[in-house]
Image (tube, rainbow, N blue to C red; front, side, top):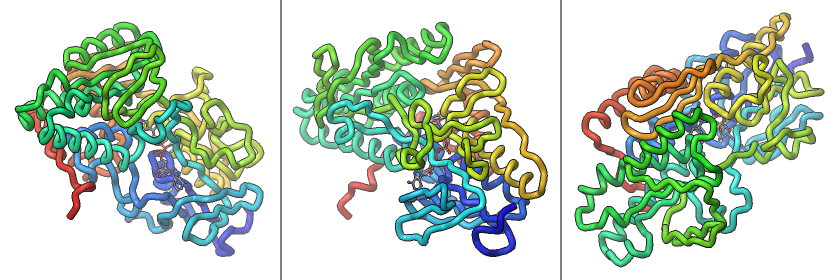
Length: 425
Ligand SMILES: Cc1cc2nc3c(=O)[nH]c(=O)nc-3n(C[C@H](O)[C@H](O)[C@H](O)COP(=O)(O)OP(=O)(O)OC[C@H]3O[C@@H](n4cnc5c(N)ncnc54)[C@H](O)[C@@H]3O)c2cc1C
């Protein structure tokens, strides 16, 4: 074991990123004889699978963002700092930050997640609404509410597409967002804004491939498409968005959709910081790791979660960028470091697949298990809820989510549909 980076008795473990992966690593270091330092640019952990529920008023901000300090309050060996990372020097074993002195480490855990990939689509970086951060979800909610309020005052805006939303991407993020927006429109806005024509408030899902939900079996794809259409979502497959302006979406076919809102749920790439590490990166800017999740040539550096390209030992396929992969890889990294500090050998990572799943709307979800078994409808939604409740960081958060989901299921109300951030006072 090297001398501690801090010059003290114990090795220092520096964890970069407080998402599922980073928090998983920190928690499994609780009993280790180390000093753990977690740095994130936010003072909260974001529960990304519920962002679409925040964006559509079903959940409050604090049900989706959780104080990082709360998450480690019972862990004496852990410290949190809120600071953007500006540079990582793997040779010097030092990380630099904005507004925080550089920190050296004995072990480094890279848990920086991914970021949106607009694939060079013209106007997307300026005008699209991505769905990746807490701020993204709140911005989208406020923008949609603002467009309905503006149309309520000036109905001419409706024909200009003020109420129409185009959602790009037929994967889980796009499908969940389109389904939830359609329910918000048809269940809530229909009574909130009785004078506005609902038929001109379109929710259009645009997918470049031949089908939505390409990762699911054909019966689940068909079910999802029907469930979306029942909720009045217009599903356009084989269509690619070419450019975006504040009020128009132009498709590669030349068709133009008047729409004041475009939600981007189409692509991710590894965090941009990893490009500066001098490592060979895998597809999508992800850091390749060995079976123990360490980075080649750097046994003291672990890469976990969305930022890592982790190969499943069982299937030899790359694991998807999912919450359960991030959490389990985080737990594994934490446990491995604890074992090594204790003089024991680390074990290879084994992923336990809980199935691939997504929701489409109230009472509509799909689940596909590793063995090929599938589930759909309300039963699948219960399975989705169970798996995602387990991912929530604390029991208090689980209780809060259950109360809010149950309330919304019975009342069909979305109490979060108020605008706060853009108010003038
Ligand atoms: C809309 C959406 C819906 C999803 N739905 C599901 C789902 O239903 N089920 C599921 O299993 N998975 C889902 N996922 C995927 C899942 O959320 C991710 O796989 C998971 O969050 C990855 O965890 P992570 O810890 O690797 O990264 P993240 O959760 O992204 O955490 C990375 C952390 O690093 C911090 N960070 C990044 N860059 C810097 C920097 N320069 N300086 C300081 N801090 C930085 C960020 O602030 C963040 O807290 C969804 C993802 C999205 C976007």
